[in-house]
Image (cartoon, rainbow, N blue to C red; front, side, top):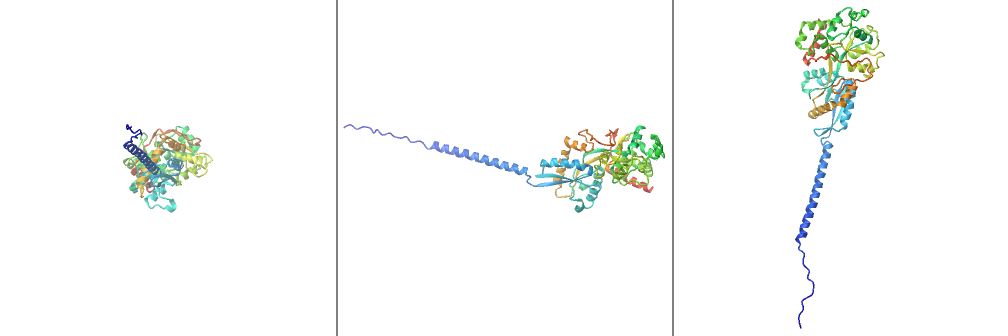
Length: 400
């Protein structure tokens, strides 16, 4: 009997290596995805840590004169809201009001936190003169180059009727005022002989910046634009002019510009107040007439008259103050905040407060007594040592 072939079906074995390759690829893909996710998570955590300031928060404390405090507080709030980071610290700005003389005394001597609060990290006084004096006496405390935030021209504060008489009859320049006050009947020049002598008061220039800068304008020759030098101050003509200005002041001179303005605001009749004119910054007069300086506004606004010639002006600087463990951070924070204050909208805020700024031309309204006049030209201020010598020369007139 014949034999037949086996009819069962034989199964072919599938090779194992393709499955192994697939498994390796799958594991590699999952590993890459996992590693990428982990890396992204680490990056997000790093970003979050940076945004939350790994070195913590710092408060930049700025001491500012009253007129500058209000616009600075508003700007400080806006900048702080952006959570600015300086050297891994989030910075918050805190502005407090301090008289410039008090800040200088505290920095030169020993700062009294009980009376003055925390020592400031930065300072905005009501004149660059204060920074110059600090630099001369404790130069190591100056933590940055002073940045001028705004300016304000020096005017003569007068009753409206007195200012009107001066304007109506040709006006007067800074260089003419010394001879005007020396005339026994100075007001006759403006057809007001009954008013007698033109009485100008100059509150102590050591503590009233407008007086010191006005003296520079009064000593400057007719065509000069400054700055006054130590050599020019030492000349006999300059000393004689100082002596004449001193001797022709009334017997009672207000201690401060603010007191003089308060006196002027009590009457509109020239001469009844005991003097006719006092140097004052435009911004301080603007605030006085509106009662923004803490006292009631005068019943009759005090007029601001800008003499002809090169006009002195006050500069308002921002400067960092050294003396703590955070000097580097606070100095950089001060500089960054200063850059923020140069933005157009922040400059507008300063202009709205009555200051002059470079970025915008804006004058607040109403502004009784203020005309926002444009100076013939600006008088360049003397340097620190010369301005100190001027104050000493003024005080020395009492002994002549």
